[in-house]
Image (cartoon, rainbow over all chains, first blue to last red):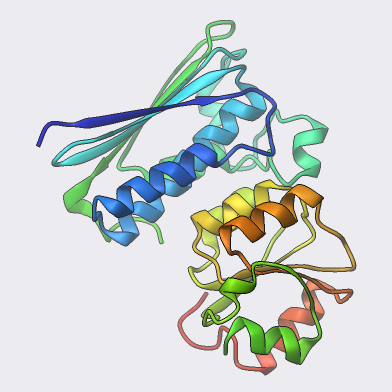
Length: 147
Length: 116
């Protein structure tokens, strides 16, 4: 099978509609018959990736690619970028504003959740240059990893 | 137990999602931080939260929850009710706190097997 890619726009500060792309990705992967545990891990990551772009990101795009042996999620945004990636990866660290926090976002768990649930997470970012996060999920690893 | 039985027993006000009322409740989760709920709520659970904005429906769908109970007398946004109805996600309100409701659910046997 050739790989299939789907792209979804992510709008900055649109807290309420964030998650729509993840719902569509989840429905597509279910229709394609992927393992339920794998779909759950992908859903956690796509939701967090969407939320990061919404909270911090400026407008961006989420792209999911399904291939025979793996699934990838890539989120690219035109936001302020991350000055210190190691610090941003620490659980509990967040630069989210008060509005986001009151809604239950910005707990500093997004990147750690992504790292815990993807088989591989690559982050490329620099101040003023936006952020690109690539997550890889091996299909044969289905059932392993976080719940 | 099914969602409808719990709603009736515990006196929740049903706002949306009638077509999901015969779902079996397989656990429960309390949380207002969406990343925590997204990572840890068990599939088939009832989610007790004070958040009432539209995004909670996305979380409930992605975690394949049985339903949402908004606690402590809070009210959801109108958009949240509309979306929950569209998606068939049972949505309730209760004046009781999450602590009290979780205790009642536990007494009724919810979450005692399997769930975290």
